Length: 105
Length: 203
Image (cartoon, rainbow over all chains, first blue to last red):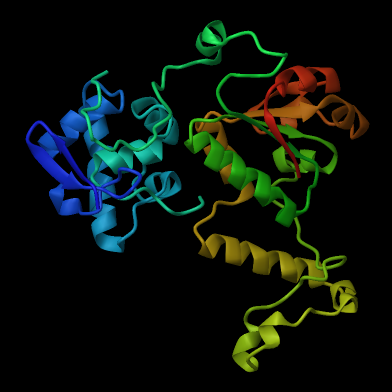
């Protein structure tokens, strides 16, 4: 499996580039990765979404989809699209150190 | 935006999220009339049966989540999907559907879950209601929203919805009945402009 190195942090990824081990993630690393995906600054609103993703994934073993973020996490979908523009679910799962979501809805 | 270090594998997030069609169009080289902007999807929803509403809704949701510019065009019976007077009550009928199986029958006798139910059963009184409520349950079990809720989700995700002018006039609808996500009632010519360069699916 490929290993990514940035600013002294190393983490294992799959062929696509997503984390394969959530324990290799840390908050300072997420701040650095945010810069790579076009998010200059992780605000408290960003962190709330990322923390929910990690907590939920720890419970279910699955990265939540946007729909689950809405129903279980009570997040506003429109706001998530603003916070993580383009591909919100993929960006969130990446910055939360998780695999990309696999659910259809 | 920070540059990606050498040897670093970054998932494809579709480039800068601020890229808009107009930005790309100015950079694009003149081609033989082909479209060279970012990916765009148009779904034509023409059916008002419950089972035919979901394919469009699910694909639109997936496309929007991938940052794809997504439009839905509702025509003929498909208008029932965005009509708030009807969209909570879409039905599923097994009549005309020879692929009607019941997975629960496998519990009675293995193999029976692949058995196609005979068409006459679909004509029994109350069968459409029963089949509809079973499908609602199966959809809810998967955590998939109902049709009205799904439209709310799509609207929040930035999907643009349009109603067909001719069907709208023919069915004597009023705009006030539409889900708020519907942007307007448009003609076939408007649709041609809207769908320029888009991948188009007829459902």
